[in-house]
Image 1 (spheres, rainbow, N blue to C red):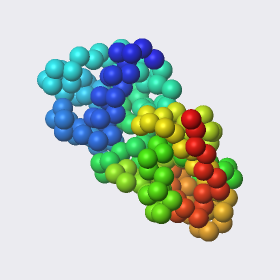
Image 2 (cartoon, one colour):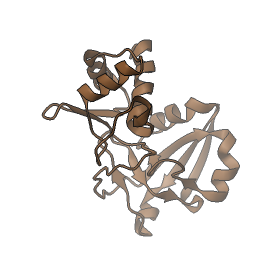
Image 3 (cartoon, rainbow, N blue to C red):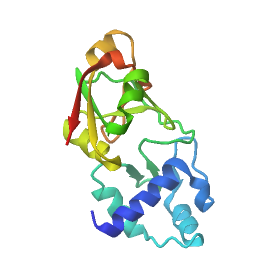
Length: 184
């Protein structure tokens, strides 16, 4: 993705996941907003972005953060919201092992408390270690947690698979960490 698109993708994430009021728009109960309303709000706030750029960001974003519905001409963030939205998630059976990437500075609190959803609706887990590394590297030195999701499922935890193939769960107590990998 182009450098300029990365900046604009971050702005879209802010608006569609956390602060739609930043550009004075409202998301519907499922997180959707019309692209025209989004463009108008951005323009009023002085954010320069075009429909074509939005479509390109959606198409090329490696994490598939956003979805456009061509029938309704609306856009939404797929997950990661700190605001209340109904994602209409359905339970799914995860693979036996999933991964969570974070920064080493949180090691002590994560070992004590487990993984908590913090300001989001769910804890985010990935099915491959490379994605977990990429997520963890955003904030410094990386730590990868290997999660025994088979045992979690046996113990009654419910997992959901988002539209962009990120696994979601309410929490991960530390007893389900099968391994902690510190990446240099």
